[in-house]
Image (cartoon, rainbow, N blue to C red; front, side, top):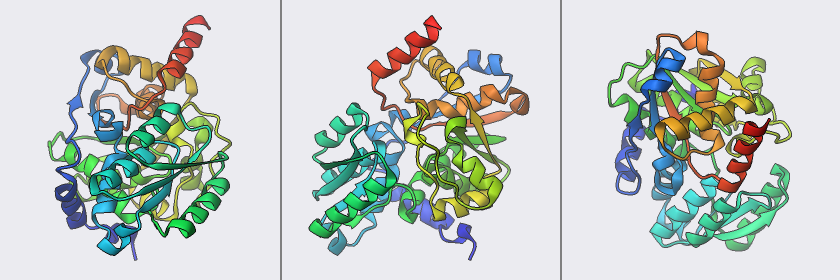
Length: 325
């Protein structure tokens, strides 16, 4: 079975209706100066202004609203370093159920605080996937909670697909849609929306060179493991899942990478020109356009600004280092 058939156009439309009361249809911003600088027209979809400060609010809400009452009774559990954790905690709070969240002990403090504020029960572990999954199993056995995978889950992907559907509903006639890729939930959702609603738009994944596992996965035809986490884009440290990889293989045109320096420059541009707060992961698509300027000359591009949950003190340190170097 082709992966595209697992999630239908109707599924995406249904998800959009289902979550409408719980998420924002986020604005699209433009900057003439950025357009002139890069020689193309960019449309920034501001998921940094989404509930919980990231697109993850969509998938989490869709996943919980499609669970049976029986599954909901014992609560939900997941593992996440940040935005998905917040999104699940918030959705659980709205539905009045327990959320059990396994988080690496080096998760950004701003994201830990947010999970607590939504009433999520946090369990800390070492920052490896192995440690996360081991502790999650223990939590699941103890609580009976239903596991919502951060990205390799059809309801999560369907919810994330609504980001791109909102863009395509505006009939902007985009040549490209660029989204960051970590585990691939957002990118595969965007790719499916393009397939159904804007087939002429080429979907491009964007990732840091230091975490280019998705690009390598595309090249080698099997899921490659993420590198040791060296990138400042802390939201993009995960490897693809089998479901997300299948959709990306079928529907994503290319995956492009960028340097750490370029990510910081892109963040600075977004802060200065668009006057909004984004986290490093969200700046990666713009960084990719800057780094591949020739490829995009004269085109119209949708850029998904995936989130805005940043530890500001860490960001100011980055900026200081950049200015001083």
